[in-house]
Length: 216
Image (cartoon, rainbow, N blue to C red; front, side, top):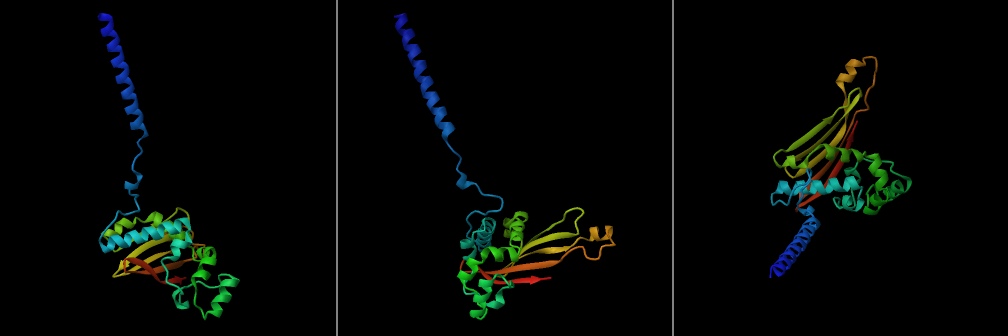
């Protein structure tokens, strides 16, 4: 009788041990729900107009970072009037078609020369802009900005996003570093100053291109 009870006890221990092992294995295999994680420069779903603008800006930012021309061009209504953009002498094919179209720019032209336009308009600076600015701050502010200064460099970079009424201005550029200028009074030109601005309108829950400008 005692031997039988001992065997039953040992069997119960083994069964409990197996059940615990299975539970621990299942627990280890459960993966976190990454879809619920919101990145620092992303906003959750929002019903407010400002929240929807932020979502569009994040979509635009992602397209810039990935150089995804399909998504990038979805923010434009083609053809573009010659007066809305500030880039010239893109490449021989683009320039020839532009002449034939009386300055108008088609989606095909933009797509085929996207890489060159990306480089000529310093769109890489748009990527840096979104790395330095948290678009979620626009929930409570109409303008966010950042000055990126590097010690012992004559130029510093400026980045800003401003929302006014239904217009969104995204700008980037360079300016002279006064501290560097004071430390190097013998240097005449220390910075090739310029500024670029991309203006969009928010309409029908979408961010749409209005114009691109360059100064400097």
